[in-house]
Length: 119
Ligand SMILES: [Zn+2]
Image (cartoon, rainbow, N blue to C red; front, side, top):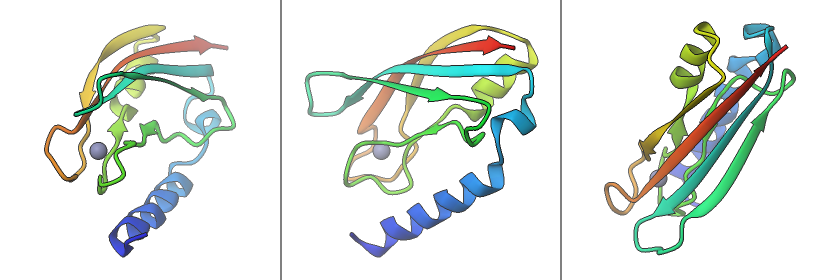
């Protein structure tokens, strides 16, 4: 493992600790499900991924990039989800590109759907 990547991982862990729990920020939320199709440049088949958040999860709605050469990458849905909760929306969809610095720009992207259940 290269040191940039492990530094990024340590930072990410710290971000998670700083973020706190979903229940603390959004007590009205029962669950959040992010369903996505993850696609990497050069790989034909999109990969389905699902990430679940519960009141005891860390309130850091970030999905890792699976590209092994990617540095500081990922897909940050924090603003999207925060806005949804503020407006008490239950569903949203869209697309995001990886924000990381990988071997190539635009190396991965997701098409996502977010579903939120309120308590
Ligand atoms: Zn990436």
